Image (cartoon, rainbow, N blue to C red; front, side):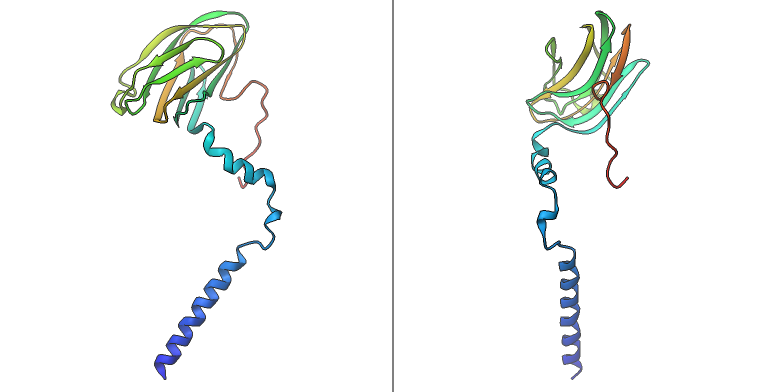
Length: 175
């Protein structure tokens, strides 16, 4: 008799747990906007920054991401007139090459670098910023990359940020 009661109580507990879980699933899935489902499905195809921080004095972009074949913009710099500046850069790319470029302009192929190189080895090169907005991008072959890029002596900068000038950011939901 005791064994039967234990089995009956155990079955009731499982049934109540299953019923409680069913309440979490909405009956009408059309309540979710189509755009949310579409964005979620397309997210893996685009650049996925794990971190992205932009600061000034000097202008600095520090980020980590999994590189893709298509360019991922990480730094927007607007200048009042053409100027030449020096890029100072350290990175780790799982020993895979990456390319840093200015959208519509110059590009620089960087050799693969290990995690030990980050912060210990710095590369630098001159770059010409054109009047208006200049967009720095990165591409690669799917490896994880961590980078810190600095513009050391940029003059006439009217804007530097992780987004295009004038972009209004939307607050995160649930925050």
